[in-house]
Image (cartoon, rainbow, N blue to C red; front, side, top):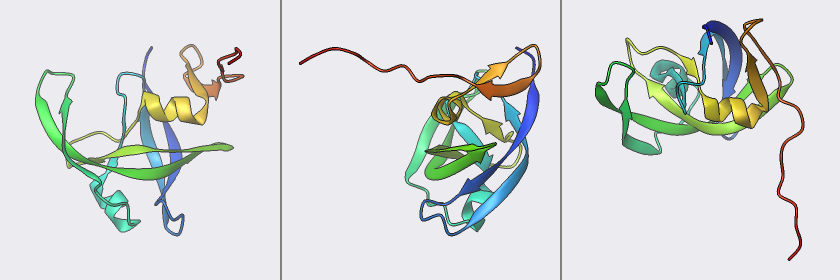
Length: 125
């Protein structure tokens, strides 16, 4: 896929405090979005899930806290679970947030593009 960076705005759930994230690695290798714990604490995102286990790319198992935030990118936004990234962790836009934003990775152009219509189940009860 290659790697590239984007920027976004993140808000706490009551939407009263926000921060601009200027350099966020984009990728589908992580389910969750990782934002620095300093930023999340500064805008009032609460640690809702503590000691959540994660396996890093090098195989190391770590624990981090997770909270709920609103993520804005381009003309779209979503609410998602975000990881409190500690010193040494990258800030990362994860696959769940990309799906919620209805964006996909254009690996050739190294940018995010609209994913198109959202699939929905059809049928009768």
